[in-house]
Length: 306
Image: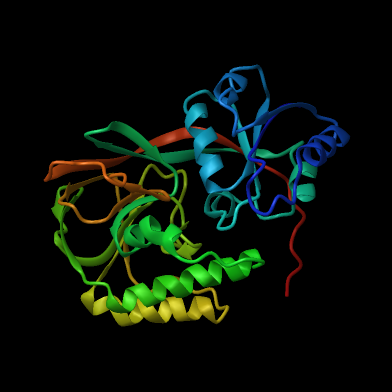
């Protein structure tokens, strides 16, 4: 195959260098065009003929490249090199880089929906989630926490979950005006999320039943009375147990929310940006764009049954 390799050379811990990835793809019989996503020319590279765009990076890189492939019909695959890798895991890219590369030939194509948020910025696509409250506040302040060095990916995720748990203990529920498919869902929420995939933030599995090609998003939320169960969920993560988020979800096609200076995020980015002045209240509409992308899932070796 003709493969355009879109590589974030700073993703993860730099374990996969450019030449290593190019050589592995060439050895598997592919014709490779390399492009760093840190270069401004990455959009131009995506316009060149290719049978597949292979994104080597974390969630941010996958979203950055994916936005350029919307409605093009060009398949995309992922080599997960980030920390959380929410998108890669939700799309089934859970093997090693060598396993994924080996399985590209003969892989299966599938469609992938993406979320659309409309507001004063116009139209904005999101791949993981849009939401408000606890997670939005945490994501906007994560950079202020003292950086820990020499941690494994699992340890780094646990660190973020621990910091999030500490914030949850003191976080106040906030009033949100929300309409979900014409149903009034306004209430005081600790957090609410419009999920396009199963997980968000530090690999929090908030919507375990989320489907990526059903034309709908999943609304999950936590009110004041849900605080203790939310703490229990984070505790289970810290203890190494993967469990479902203990609160119900509701599938929808359209959500309207009124922004009134509370914390808000698109994927891992806070809105509005720091020092950006926004006159509120502002109505934001969240919908889904069905089958916006084509994903090529590699043939991966079956996991042994325990």
